[in-house]
Image 1 (cartoon, helix red, strand yellow):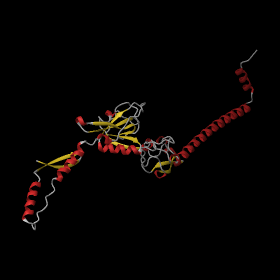
Image 2 (cartoon, rainbow, N blue to C red):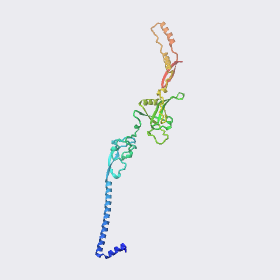
Image 3 (cartoon, rainbow, N blue to C red):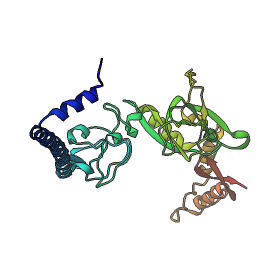
Image 4 (cartoon, rainbow, N blue to C red):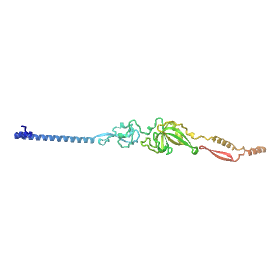
Length: 318
């Protein structure tokens, strides 16, 4: 016959002498007390360690890089613009630059102000320059001139567009237009030198183009002598167009030389006659009077003749 385990344990305890039973109870109590105390000690130790870690972290310091001079977007960072300082670890941003050597020589994507902690998000990738000068290729020159809605293709010209530059001179039926430069790269429109993602017009009062040093002189000469218009090209069209110097828009009139010659002939008629010789006899004076009477010039008209911006005054007989 199988007995219930609990009943068996009860029978064993009932047969145990009271002294041994008391010792067993005391032992169990001591064991429970030790276990509980040990568990509390472990918890206290863990709590104290956590407090110490927090205090250590609160008192810990680390180096960060501060900006001591304003840096505009697109500029290269120099050592004079940065300073390393120690601050509490808890105040340190996660993306803070902790060593100035990481930032020196890099380009700033966004402008940073004095007193600001330099962030890794403020730096452009290494080897990339965002300044305007980097958009002008080596050997080229940037030239800026004014445009309006008509001459600037209604604002549809954007950075990196290619245009033909035409000069216009004269007015009315005498208006003359000719290409001055062909397939010229636009590097900036107004103050914008980066192409925007939105495909929309961007009216501006000026454009900046990149041209060779020789074409720079040609363009500036055309700026002072004519009105310039831009003709927008397709991005894949780089077919050259025959160009002329701006002086070709101002042909010299064919009558200029003949008018000058007639003026010189008219001026030659104004040479005064010789004075009479009072020591000569009456016959000589009579001959002088007859000759001077024949050479007296007739009354003259003065006519103003303009050749371009040059004024000539020509006298002709009435």
